[in-house]
Length: 428
Image (cartoon, rainbow, N blue to C red; front, side):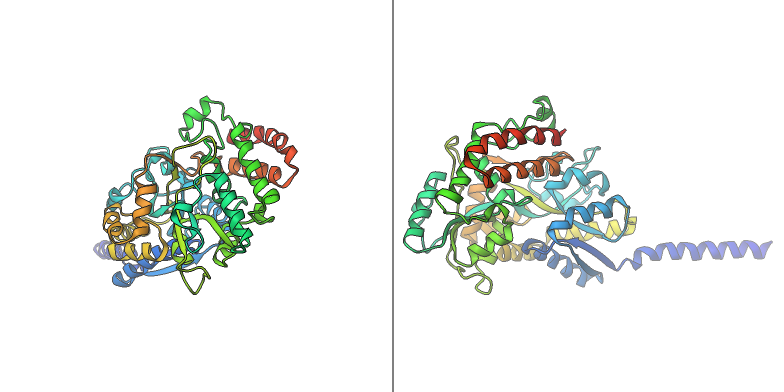
């Protein structure tokens, strides 16, 4: 009996030692992401931390077109193939219940409060589920070798006038180019719509789901401002010809390629493309780029901006040891001033730690512009809606405006009216 007791004691010690070694053996973290300048720069900080702490960072790239579908499948199946994944406000509410809360990541206290509002990334218990990698918003880029700062269009009408003159003078093939396809609505549809006091759902700029529900999830598709917006782009493409005929099908990469190739004077793109646009190895217009506020439509006189964050999240299904290590890595990233400064210089995206912003702005004119026109602006709108049905609403919206802008001009009002109930239904 004494021997049996000793055997149990030895087995218990061995089991405890084995359990304790699990944490010690977590020497690899797998990152699910979509290759892009800001994500690459953020992962570089992970790799720096990993090298110092003996943790191998395994990068698992996914294409943007299938990212949400693929990650949703992984999360809902309780798989453990990723330890950290790219998280975006567009699908914040869709995934919130499947993600590890991150309120215990201490360095989150340095994140911008606007972007970290729990209405965006909060779960049912009111806990946050994200650690930011940086601010993401678009700006109005223009060719500084063709247009002086005082000549930059301040209205949508001026965008047409200036574009046509540049085309007539043989300076560019197109005036404006920007993404329009599904998941790229921000780069033409959304900014011009918001700049005209318009929105997908009514009232405009509202993101409180209770208020949207009380309004009956009313679509903005039949508002006069929406018809104005669609007619503007129909005319820009077909009448004034300041934009490519195929633009309704363009994603951001196709539009950026046209701009970087020197064929367009203006575009709207995320600020994080500042570095790429000015990279001589990638852009024919490097060093000839500047940025300004968005041109406004006839229904708005005050400038506006949208401001959101891209972030990182941790799947709820992975082991406690891996969660703990992932949080340590994300906390270290938030405190890495050198790495975040490199992120800004490489991309033009303001880094996630707000305490670093004033120092960067004091040394960089582009960051100073971003602080004045976006980060410190009181006139901001969130770039998405925050309920699980938002991807379906977005698709219903984009399908409708795409059909309207590619059809006959006289049919625009009819197409928008037909699409209105589809948008509202998708929200419900």
